[in-house]
Length: 580
Image (tube, rainbow, N blue to C red; front, side):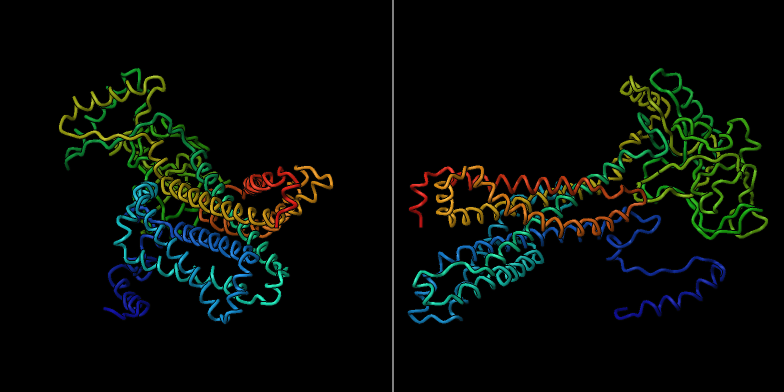
């Protein structure tokens, strides 16, 4: 019911758990708001892979950064052009305009700019919505004109943008002194110049942060895709076997044995194995037990989840999974291997037994001291069955001749032929069953689809932010250069070359980029280190991305400066000295 105290309700569920389960059981009832599951829940056996709240937050931050850069451009250009508008303000004051009226005028100008910008943004959003939906693989925007929440946010940002971009220019421009302006003595104040430089630093810092973050995301995704999973999945195709009817186990085992033998007769097929799960799956595809587990005589019972996989004797060999100690299952050794178990390093690490010989020790699951015991016959290296966002699952492997999934390793030279032969043999033996196979490499690649998508969106947004920053810088440089045209002419008359003049402008902006780097690097380091901590297997912080992002910003800035300053530097001093 609405208004229910969740904590109190969970307390009331404890006696129910004790009555129907066990007071000693570590299981408990956990209540979750359904609307928070997709982005905020990451439990084992989720119905589907959860979304990422961090990814959403990052993209929201980038969106705000882009807006801030655009607002900074407006403030920069408005205050830079203060000299041009000084006489206008002076004349308005002479004929009776007060500060309040002037401020309203400039705020209205800013409002109109923002409204027009919002309207244009709506049109652009409608045009690019299909491409953006394709990029994120989700129909986020169908019809922007019908999205009420979207329109409300757009209206909010239009108002906020008006205040942020229009407030300072309105105050600054309305404070001009009439006498100084009309006498022609007005010049941009040091505080105005300082503000513009500060805003340029903010733009540069934002660009450095976004470019560096994009490169780190791309590097992390590439690292996960290329990292050694502990097994060789090249040219390995997997599929679910036909279903069996209860009581037909012997016949099913015989049929699948024939199917396997027929496949192995093909020169294009190297090996065939079976398993209860196919590598490269999500968390809900593997079995597990949470009823407690212990190694008799070596450990106490550990209340934790242990993952269970059932395989045949060819599974480890087919995937080139290495044994640290002990042996593989033996197909014809049913008497011993029915109660045998192979464990991975992660299982032993949980008991702090990584360096201890555990062969022939017995594992017992559950709380019943008379329960079944399984003899450890081998220890394998850790194998990452699923995404490298998660650490290796503590897993116990049990033996069965046939399981519900088949894995087939194809000859690298005859992959197409191998697939054709699998299809032919399947069609002959199981004509009523549908064959749906997938390459294990593709399954692993799919696990990182969300991360790749995030990296792609991040890259697009970062590129857009850099473009907006460069456009603003170009406008500001154009104005500054035009204001310093006579200075350029004087320098040329005194013998300065065009490269020397351009270098003077370079020096000023390189200093600003240096300050921006000092501000941006700590933001990148702490922000992305926190993001990387979400991954069990992550790259070390790649300092080279700072160098690359800095180089991109410097090159874009210098090209922007050169494009405008060289034009003025190449002018005849006779013309530039006439410039007012």
